[in-house]
Image (tube, rainbow, N blue to C red):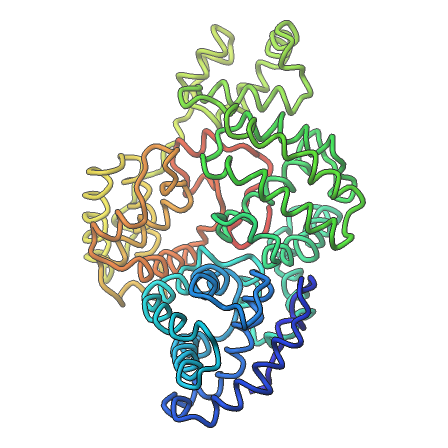
Length: 521
């Protein structure tokens, strides 16, 4: 195969010149390895991909950890294999299947030939990482937005080293997904995502935020973009400056009930993002913004809304902020409510329950109107094809049992709704695979969209809890959840169709949805 050097693909410079490290692989170590009996024990695919795998491994370790081959250690290879490769390495499935055996035999070669002082430890530690490495590589939630784009592009026949073609594909999809918006907004979002966010999501800057997954990175950056583009703020990213970003964080993000982990990583991700833009000369105010937002970390964590804040309080705060009302001026707040009762009533139907609305509106004429409950319609059993009714009943029984025991009726109804949509699909994919995996995958997918795995949310269950209950592996369940989301279009956070009532009531941005594939609509 044609060797692709990592330096040709990444938009940011290595902190250490990579040429001598790549030369060590291509001119010294790989020639010796390729003529060794350990190389002969590899299968055809593994032999074909071996040199590229060694170059990718060398490049990743140098790019993300600034570590040259002579200094490789067990902790360095573990970081690469369970964090950097799963997040950012985008190759074919055949290539990924070959990685572990190639590295295992290569480290054995270094050990036999006494070519590396830590070769024995590298080989031994790599063996212990086998299951963990494969599980992480299969976890699509860890993918960076850039990796997701590359894989989607490759599935469309675009070459993995043709990044210009990938961006063109990304923009085409963006125009299709954002068709309801004006051309100017679409162009802003596509440009920012393509030239700022995607490269950042795979840059070494993101390693400063160790615990952030690919989904969380795109989610947090989406909050920033949508928040500054929506409602009364409307400040295009090209016009960002310190006061705009700081005010957005303090006035918009801090008051909203975001998951605990998101609150903790928001400022570190913003800081890494603006530092990246400053170093790459992408924004004139980036360095200043990166420095000035750091003191807001404590406020972001400690000054969020209490768990018992009512939905109507959160809705009212958003309405006040959207209308530029001074939330510290009690009389201004009362005047705003009095002047906008009817409009507030209509908007609040999407955010709150009828009980909370009556508390706000008192005895106005609007409060006497019948407020429709935002309940999902039960699945119409007669609408499900006879061929899949047994499957639907079996899956619903399993998801009901789990939800009734560990979650709530809201989750149970939502899982039945998803099972019903799957049962009505004509491609009949549900006929393949164990039903326990389908049930676990449905709960997993619904949980992903509703922050079920975040301990600061109620109810809470971990991904491991779901898998242990149904006796399924985490990697298989994660893959099934991804398939389910793809089959029914479940890819928007706070999409009312797939949100619990709790999540619907706490949607921080009513104009946009943040999509898991990186698009903002």
